[in-house]
Image (cartoon, rainbow, N blue to C red):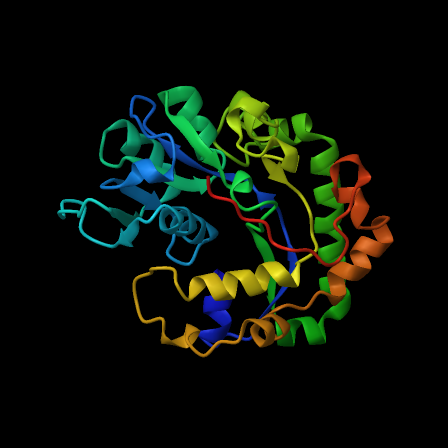
Length: 295
């Protein structure tokens, strides 16, 4: 959603070049609460990291599927019986806010869900990839004029990220270590917390084990169906500020204008094909249908 906002609201001439990772987020709630699913969030306070985030979009998909109404109010505001109060909070603040009772839950990228579960006795209500199968999370973006005048450099950068994705998928334990406080210190988290992020949960923690998705996955191809889905769903996603720019936005045309997959197609071809990124070597190909199930 952020690149959509940048391109069509802020008029910044950017292009999405590739996906960086898939899934990798979760809805986390107080471990002592009776919250088991989206229907139980009525009357609750839920934090999201940004209005124009996958997290806000996915949270509101779940709420609306259960007949709940997302609202934006002050934290002390009175809620109706079918309303859920959403507000933005910085990800590092979410686990402690949950522990202190300031919020009832949050949706955010890892490793904050794993940290809250392991250190603060929170409960992971749903993994995002168990709601929207292999959804995009982070993406690689550049200005289109920069890509046009520095095509060789951009191609090398995309190649490097694609190779890194393959390495992370093939070496999850070492990736967790390098990111950790004990390793290279890219994240201020202990290795055991990050190891959980890179480990697939057992079937008891997911609603759709047959989807066979990774808790955090690495797949670079920017499926047009996903971008179209994001554009269409953003039109009904509550955010602060003026959203008139979304009203006349055609999802097909917006996807063609926003995404440039020429660099990543070359990188995928050179690394051996898209099947390198799927468990068991089963590739979805370059076309797919988006799968979303709220149960």
